[in-house]
Image 1 (cartoon, rainbow, N blue to C red):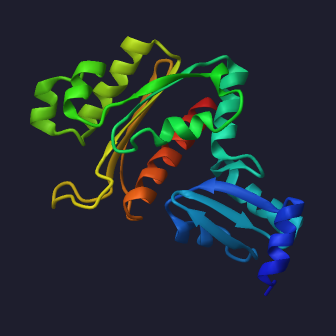
Image 2 (cartoon, rainbow, N blue to C red; image 1 turned 135 degrees about the vertical axis):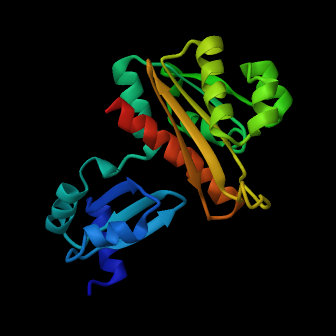
Image 3 (tube, one colour; image 1 turned 30 degrees about the vertical axis):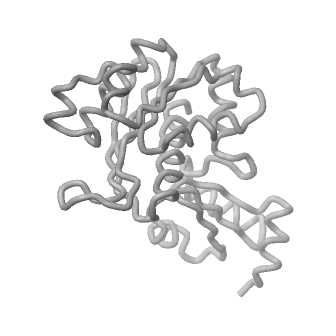
Length: 224
């Protein structure tokens, strides 16, 4: 068994793979027989290997699950947007501006990020994005229908090439039908749109972080 200090020394030399995954046990199963350690924060997982040979074996197995060996997720997404000449906008509810903050952590993000809206209340979802009162009344703020209308509002009002909308119950709280951590993440790129449901179990602020990470990784996959 390779010591933790040695693994981190190898990480410094470049023997690391970065993935976004909520299925930690599946990762371990996929990489059975390969020596590695795992460091996770929210949905982002760093896999650390004792040698570059082990890393390369894992990289072949994981394929496009790997978003980087060194860059942060927001750096990768930013580079892809910039390379394609695309502009991004965001609509955030439960994440409260965290997604936009992560995007602008990257120097030069003004080249591909227009900005966004924090629509924490139903009132602002309606006023700023055009979410229908009927949709909110019938399905609730945390629903695929509301997330889809948030995305449509971004398209109509901002006109950007790409958009991300997030609405969820970060916690604490929730109900039987809508548990804590339930989140809907919508992403569009040109004419392609995806709205997906997740239930995170990390606690309030890590749930918010995981929402941003999953959203950015969804956009990364669409850009690839």
